[in-house]
Image (cartoon, rainbow, N blue to C red):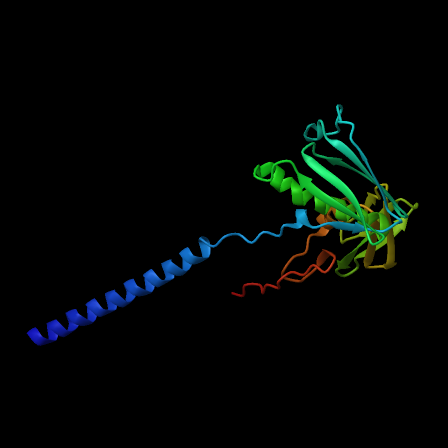
Length: 236
């Protein structure tokens, strides 16, 4: 009996030791993941090339009556291309330098003090916003919207109004914002085009709100290549 109790006690101790070792290993793995330094994109340091059909003008005059309080004392960057023009507010601590290299125009973005968190954050953000504006005035943006559902249809009425049948007792009518071109190549497909990616996607998701995709029947309004995981209904 004493021998059996000793064996069982030894087995319990070995199991506890193994469990503790496994927990320690998992904890070590978690620590190794959480303590790893973040991988930074350093997108702000990348020069931005743009063609001769794009004209950029940086107005150094501080904005004293801004549209939003955050733009107070900012400067203004005008970006003009074949498809339109954009005006971007530039923070006072963000510096823009224009260069010419082998016939190509380059824009370099920098900040006064990269050690300050706010300036470091706006460094890459400013560069990304300028790159989006350059793409918008040269190529433009196109966002497709798909209507998935029985009887779902869309049409343009009056040239500036989008009318949709989405299963309600009445058609849904949305006014098309200025600067956005809306077409319906198919009854269940809407194409939105514009030079401002933010406005185009904002209007697309405004349309989506009327019939958000649901996971059971996979019906609704889908923006771009959006998909949704299918769920099965609970059966009693």
